[in-house]
Image (cartoon, rainbow, N blue to C red):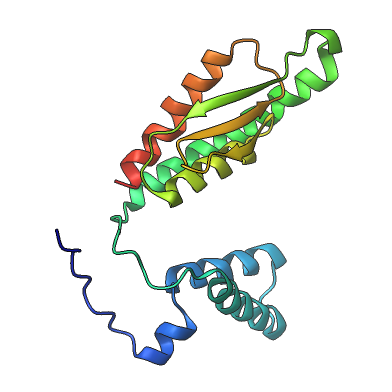
Length: 177
């Protein structure tokens, strides 16, 4: 079985070497400008440096040939869902910490089986879990088939597992398929 042929990159070779992932470079630069909240020559220079150096330092060599289609609406919907969950989880964690007696808090390490094929999808899932207050991804199995999650309060481990799989993993399957 042969690998699918990738269309040639229209950028000249020097530009491909300098910006191996132009969308990542652009995103990093824009995020930096949003973080500093000012458009000065120094902040633009720093955004350019970050957008250039981070992808260069994290590049993994030539692409594997496995690509996924960009689905802007699915990605935007996922981002909105995660942002809403972050706000909701902040409130829930504040209630747990401020009002729940310590002996009633049920922290737990939970193994969540993962059915995602793409390493990028597994990474996004792990980061999503960590970004959501009250949970953190403690470990990713070497075969990327399970995540070890620590939950601040998980009286029902199966419910936590089901929520991660139905709320996040199912959407990531659609994005990374």
